[in-house]
Image (cartoon, rainbow, N blue to C red; front, side):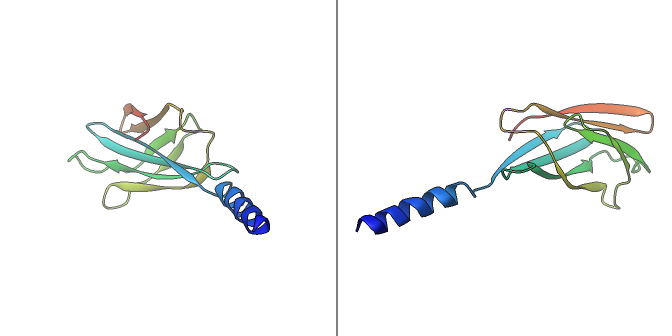
Amino acid sequence: MKSKMLILLFSVALLSGCIQKDYVFFGESENWRVQYVVTDDNSCNSTKGYIKYLNNDPLPEQLEFSVDNKEGASISLDENGMFFMPYGCSNATEGSELKATIKWNSQSETIQLPLK
């Protein structure tokens, strides 16, 4: 009986170390919606997310986008006004305060991304 209990406790401890937690950071302005998801996976805190153009004006051809104070990238939106971020790594965690900066057509916006 003791050996079964030890095996059960060991299994629970092992599995609890493998559980991933997603932190969803989300913000919106008149022109943009940004979602940035950080997965705490005990390695690099992998990231994914998207930006979406909300304005009815024509889509910008090129824009610069950065989040989490990382170096920005020059990107293009798809026909639906969206850009899906490639997977990356982040130091962001549950207590982080993130912001996204978007520059397009001689305009610039910084959007706060509170934890959702």
